[in-house]
Image 1 (tube, rainbow, N blue to C red):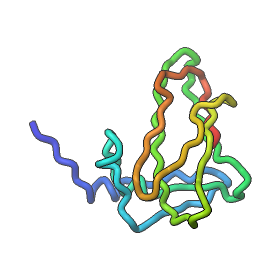
Image 2 (spheres, one colour):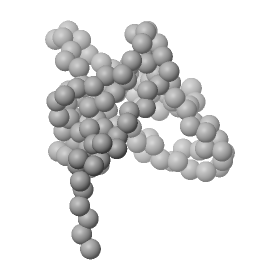
Image 3 (cartoon, helix red, strand yellow):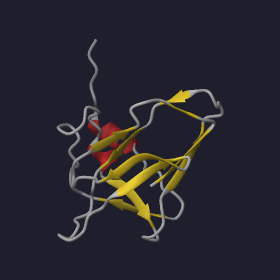
Length: 130
């Protein structure tokens, strides 16, 4: 059996999720994930993003698992899709339920980077903040 990935079909299926108090971003450039992650994420997905509407705010989102003992594995994929000035750098920490989950995340311009917690997480509600 062979499987075929139809890029055109997948690109039409992707709809970005916009968080409250966020501003959507996108680029027309290709974001390379084939050479930078094992996940081979479609460029159509990686070239869409959001940022806080107010620069001083965080992006927050949560998942309700409904089961406090169920284990989840979380993988977050990032790419810088804006051209930053020479003296600028985008860097942020990620917290899970108020505790540090990933420190000093710095997306690379037009290249996918994957962040994972290296272990399963538990909780009936998983609240992330960046």
